[in-house]
Amino acid sequence: MWEKEREVCNMQVVLENEALKVTINSFGAELASIRGKETDTEYLWNADAKFWKRSAPVLFPFVGSLKNKEYHYEGKAYPMGQHGFARDMEFAVDVQTATEAWFSLHSNEETKAKYPLEFILKIGYELEGKDLKVIWQVENPDYKNTVLFHRRTSRIHVSCEWKRKAVGILF
Image (cartoon, rainbow, N blue to C red):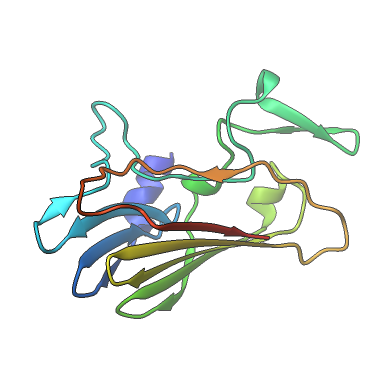
């Protein structure tokens, strides 16, 4: 089901400066490519489905698998697949410039069936020279306490000339 939606909905956002060209999919707000322009080197896993079809999935609101693929909140059981649901959802593209993009996912009826809490998940990507900043913002628009278990996973090829500089998670 998700693969079909991915084909229909996915929009690619390209960021570029003098040093890097970065491609991000709106489906899952997932990095698809980080290419060094000087050497034409690809630094991110190519998502070869033969081995692993993802490159840098957003894992939210959980990381890993849950016992019986469910968790309990306020006396009710909720189903949850491995690594949550954000990686399998279309994000809105809120901001797009030559060197910066922001994506957001808001709680809705579909997410509340799996995660009953209100949230706004914002993911930003910003190029500064040879650096790519990845910024997470999780907002709680409700008065209830929100519990999150997440992290960002990337498979990045690192050479002697280029290193990942900043990955930020802001709460």
